[in-house]
Amino acid sequence: QVQLVESGGGMVQPGGSLRLSCAASGIIVSRYEMRWYSQAPGKQRELVARITRNGRTYYRDSVKGRFTISRDDAKNTVLLQMNSLNSDDTADYYCYADPPDLRYESPYWGQGTQVTVSS
Image (cartoon, rainbow, N blue to C red; front, side, top):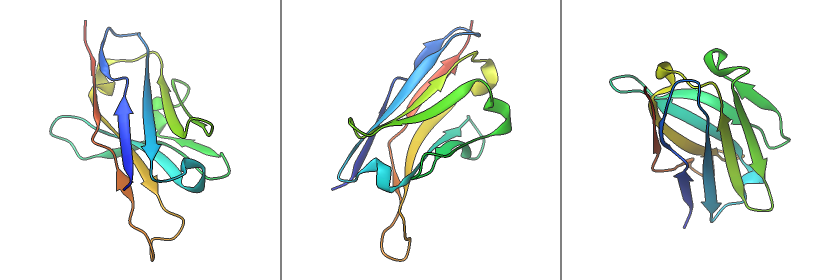
């Protein structure tokens, strides 16, 4: 059974930092493209960042230079370091695993972790 378990969310003041973790079981994260999505209240879920199997990274324009996605293969975990947070970053954040071939395997979602940026 595959599980993606996010942690690290919480409330932080503007300008602060948080580090989100996505601990995977049942899959090896290095064999998947791993992504973080955010969903703000009343809005659609949007891609925040992704890391490919070979380690290439991509970021949404609004988080470039502030967020860093990384992968800890030894811990089978994907991280999202979020710095210089602002109120627009307030959202639920979800971890997502994209399989190598969607013909044979469906993607996986975590349950989400809430991030609130407020003074």
